[in-house]
Image (cartoon, rainbow over all chains, first blue to last red):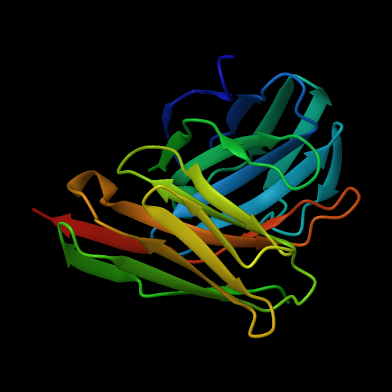
Amino acid sequence: DAGVIQSPRHEVTEMGQEVTLRCKPISGHDYLFWYRQTMMRGLELLIYFNNNVPIDDSGMPEDRFSAKMPNASFSTLKIQPSEPRDSAVYFCASSRPGLSEQYFGPGTRLTVT
Amino acid sequence: GENVEQHPSTLSVQEGDSAVIKCTYSDSASNYFPWYKQELGKRPQLIIDIRSNVGEKKDQRIAVTLNKTAKHFSLHITETQPEDSAVYFCAASRVSGGYNKLIFGAGTRLAVHP
C-alpha cells in the first residue's frame, strides 16, 4: 500500500494566483480529511468527506477555499485567489469508518509570496 | 464548541527519564482519544489510541490513561530516548455514524537530551 499520496510536495506561488492541492487516499478508506498546519494555529481541520460527500466544512477559512472529491480515489483543495497568510503545510488524511486511525499524507508545503 | 487543551507546550527531559503530557477535552460525548507523533518535517503518525470504555492502555514504553469523569487523558513515555524527540498531539473525537472528526490539541514539543 502506497499510503496517502499528495501532490505537489512544495508549491511556491504569488499572491492572487490559484493553487490546487491534490490527494489520493488509501484504497478502501471511506473518509478523507484536509488539514492545515501552521505554527500559530496548529493542526486545523478544514473539511472532511465521507464516501465522497462533504460532511463538515466548518473549518474552511473563507470562500477563497474550496474542496472537491469527484471519486473515491481523488480529492482537491483549491485556493483562489491565494494570499500570503495561506502559507502553511496542508495535509490530507484518510481513514476507515469508526474508531480508526487517520493516515496522513506527506503534506504540501505552500508558500504564497 | 469542541476544544482540546494540551499541556505543557514544551517539555525537556534527560534520556532515561519519564515524560508526561496531559490533555483535557470539552465534549463529554467524546469516545476516541488518539495520540500522534510528528517528527520535524514529517507527517503526524499515530502512536497509541484509547477508546472511552478503557481506562488505560500500554504499548511497550508508552501508555495512555483516560479519566472520563474529569474529561482528561494523559500520555506517559518511560525510559525516554533521543528518538522520542518530536511534537506530540493529543486528539478527541465523538465518533458515531458518519461523524468522524478529530479535535487536536496544540501539541507538545518534547526534547530528550542524551
